[in-house]
Image (cartoon, rainbow, N blue to C red; front, side, top):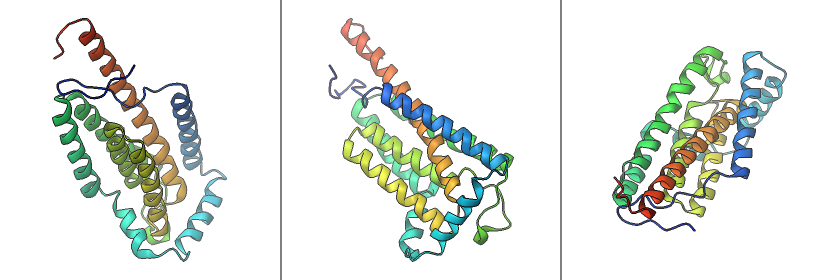
Length: 221
């Protein structure tokens, strides 16, 4: 039986990762590997990807809202939002573990994305040419992980749905404004799903240990 948050305890995290989420994480890992291979080898997937990107970039989607959503992937926007949520969760639970786990997960985004961008050196869409280093998208990964962690820690289903819709808008905005190709965004989503899954597993194990200590009468730290 799951217990609601209690002041002074970690409380319950979102439902612990089980078979469905493990399957989705495995699928995300396989898809990320496939997309990365296609980018590294200049595979046949890149041609339809670039055609789709050009279609979206030249479509009738309004530029102003697209730019607004694309900007939600900026560190200057996403990190303050995550910071507010981490401060609230820390105050609510009296524990630093959720904030520490989230901060470490967020730190992995540039640590993983930056080297991959440099190594793969994928050329950007025409508005960004001749620059390279666009796969995976740093903005898409920043938005997905930051807002995903917010939904994970606040544990509200409607926030999870909103997070999915918000990140879809961010990805569409990035492609519409010519900042990235669709595969750049999709690859970032796959990588972000793996990071969020790892964070959820870490938090679930920590809560289980805390619950066992409380049940046995051992004071929690």
